[in-house]
Length: 152
Image (cartoon, rainbow, N blue to C red; front, side, top):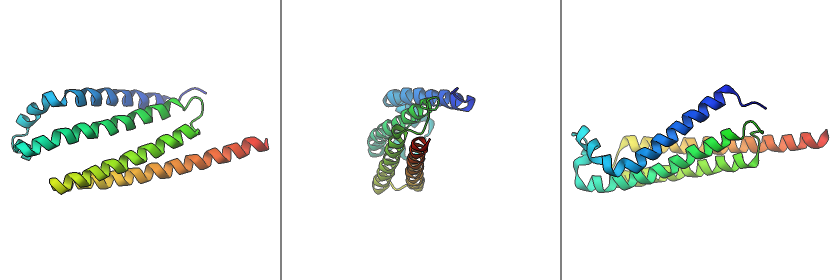
């Protein structure tokens, strides 16, 4: 089966996002001062805030890069058939990552209250629930396909 054009475009976009995210995460400790100079009115000039924001953002880059890799791997399965248990497990892992990020947002808000970060945490909870729902649907599609293959 030939890979659809939209899937190929999406895969290349995800590769680009992954590379930009990886470069950004690696160079962030060196470019953080530039960001602080650009946003002079931000509370990031407080040393305690800076000491917490850099490790937090660096720690958040890892799960998001992992999610992008999982999505690339799922897109790579389209030509051979996307209804495989590996994709179901990947969606469950993505859901767990989103819940972990939501927990990190709640912890962040304990130290530095922020409506935006808390809103992002709630969005991550919704994304995790969507990922779990999609995993359950794909799992059921696999079961139906296997039953259909046995009856033919």
